[in-house]
Image 1 (cartoon, rainbow, N blue to C red):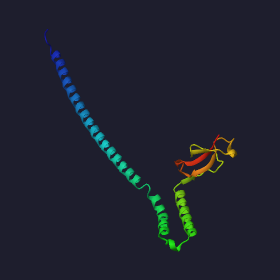
Image 2 (image 1 turned 90 degrees about the vertical axis):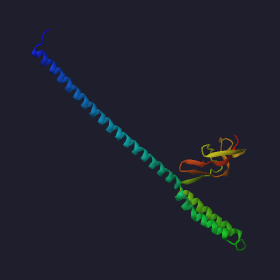
Image 3 (image 1 turned 180 degrees about the vertical axis):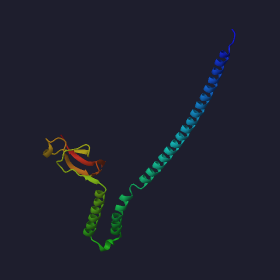
Length: 178
C-alpha cells in the first residue's frame, strides 16, 4: 500500500497521544506515590501519638493506684495516734474502767473513719433471715423459736463488712436447723 501524507499525520497523532498518555500516567504515578508516602507518614505519627498516650495513661494509672489509699491512711492516722496515747499510759496509774472507756472511744473513732470511707458493717440479729450473699453459715443450732421460719440467723459470731455495695467479708453466723 502506498502511504499518503494523511497516514503519516495519523501516526504522528498516535505517537503524540501515546507520549501524552505516558506523561499523564507518570504524573499520576508520582502523585499517587507522594500521596502514599504522606499517608504512611501520617500513620506513623498517629501510631507514635497513640503509643505515647497509652504510656502516659498507664503511668498515670500506676500513680493513681499507688496513692489510691492516701485519703484512707490520712483519716486513720488520728486513730493510730490515740492507740499510741493509750499504750503510753502507765498501767499502775490507770484502772480497767478507764482503759475500757479509752478503747471504746478509739473503736468509735475507727468506725467513724470506716463509715466516712463508705464501709458498712453487716451485723444480722437473731431472727433475721439467713442471706448467703451477706452471711457465712459456720454452724447450725437447734432453736425452737425459728423452727418454722426457714434458715434464720440464731447467733452472730463475727461481723462482716461491705464497701459500697460489695461484700468485703461476710458476717459469720450460726443458723437454725430446719
